[in-house]
Length: 124
Image (cartoon, rainbow, N blue to C red; front, side):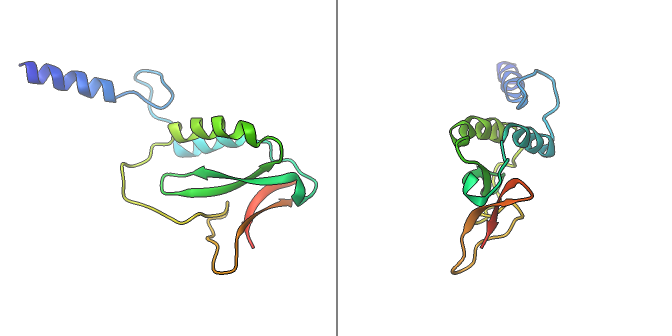
């Protein structure tokens, strides 16, 4: 009986969600990504206005480009994003990718660019 009670306590403790509201369903990964994007300033007029920062999806690094000077605020936004994701325990791993999912090949790197007044990280 004690073992059953302990199991119920453990299951209840693990049942919380990323949005810290008891009994609330976990947020969809797309919602988590949209929330992150809403916090980022990606405005630019030239590539020099942008810097590359490292974000994480459930399987590895994804490089993002944001407005230079806002990168100091990025770490707290990234932490909220990672906490929000409903990642599986293990099972995937990828090399650093740009925002379109491309991986740099030999002689290439992921750089910040300004496309249509928006900072983007891209393989070049």
